Length: 154
Image (cartoon, rainbow, N blue to C red; front, side, top):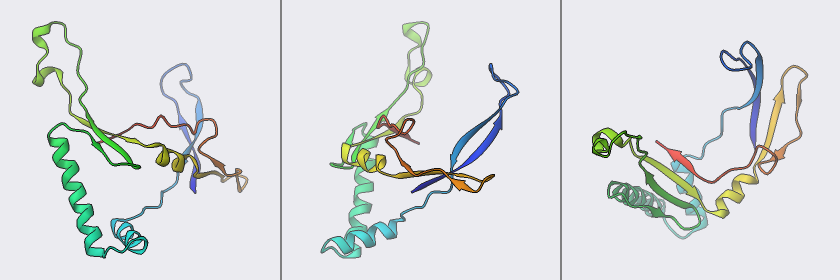
């Protein structure tokens, strides 16, 4: 479950300048560590912890090597990584150079449907501290919980 708390903010610009607005902000999210991932894969397979650890290290190396070559990487049911290099708009063709027009590369992760379905199945809640209630848990499929599937890293 992803728990949220209510925060407030005083707007300093725009049509609502001076107005206090309220929004849901995620509380600290639980984390599955590398060791926990290894342990879980060991339990679900016949691999040793060393085999799983080596496979994860190798996967990281393969993905990094592919990124250095400008390649995308498809990881089956997980999704894929690809590089995106935004470009600045220049006034003349001659100004369009690697140094002047291209911004820093970004890594974009696009999850496959299985992973998007898992994310949409998470229960969501908002704690209301003033009255001590918690809103009815919902799922990521409610309005505002939609996800386009692309996530930039870095």
